[in-house]
Image (tube, rainbow, N blue to C red; front, side):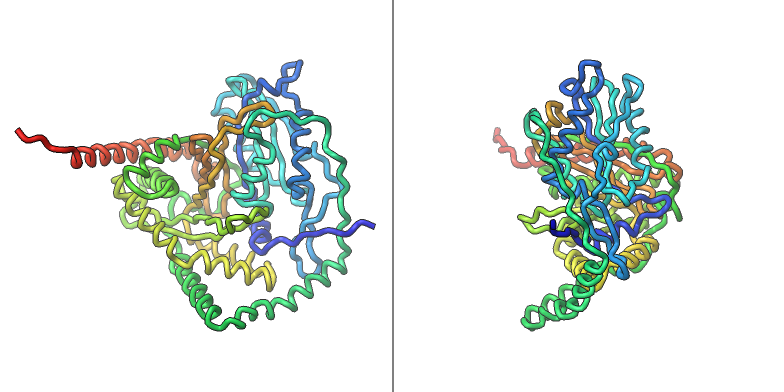
Length: 480
């Protein structure tokens, strides 16, 4: 008889299921654009069977593709089990747009596809194959529930489908047999033992009193740092309606990575500092255009920070949520970058990540329901205005079978009182920006997207001017 299988979700993973509401669906997504020619069938359409086969070859490397969620009785905590009725054709679907569909049409279609909820009674992911794009291209619109992966692990899942050069899949993958799920009594008994052992695990660090005291001091400091911003609401802005609606707009843009590095070299900071500075400039411009003063504003962003160890490769969420103020009222781009650099340096030296990670670990031991309720109530008090996440992607071009990927636009979900989320991802010499927004609250989100380009040009010009000034000041002088 085959052994039973299940895998328990962490408290952080489970909390994302708790954010599911009528108008807020907690999947992350990516829109990837490819050459269509190498996958054209003789009838002129895409070879859908080849696309399906590539996905099926990846399932052994990512077993989560074929797993669904069930709850532990009594404790109500979710676990992963193999889906005995898994059907890849339910999860990978195909549509064609009137040809040639331009980028504007694709954005509208993606907004509709991304606002639809995932079925969490099945493996919580789906892919839409969108044919008919201009320049003989097609898109893969990939949706994965946040309980399954964060930005880093989500990118790893996507990369299992791709190669560094064109490739083929020969034949079919080996047949798969789902492992049976455990009985209800087994789930309850194992969870009960876990809860009984939790207090002893929490007291284990006391065997090393000096180290435990230092760790406790750092954790308390981190929780206090996080609460300094979290205990009071951020300034209410057009990005923060009381409740968002059900419809979404998804928009995007891109910036040259080499130019971002030029700014970093000329003005200092990191790539992420340049991203935050450009974003703050566009946010501030939009707020002023909508009669919102930015002079004394307390504008904050939630920044997911990766806390994985160097060799840690698992799925799920391994992030600490940190908050930082953004200088949206600073008009001078170089001065804005300097302020962002100062803020992120303080953030890196703070104990916020440690404090939040400790809280997540505590919830793992005593039960995730408390953590989920705490997270929901905390976000309802508007401790931040927007989410900005930046995920490093591969620097070389990638291929889906024989088709080169030209662009990848990431998407983050929205909280109930948050009308805008920005996800940024680097790939093949470019930095791609994806804007998920509530259609009712931000019908003109494209103004923010265009503002990214305008603000980055100003920042780039400031970096070039600084470089010229430095060259002139260091140039040798000639005597007459």
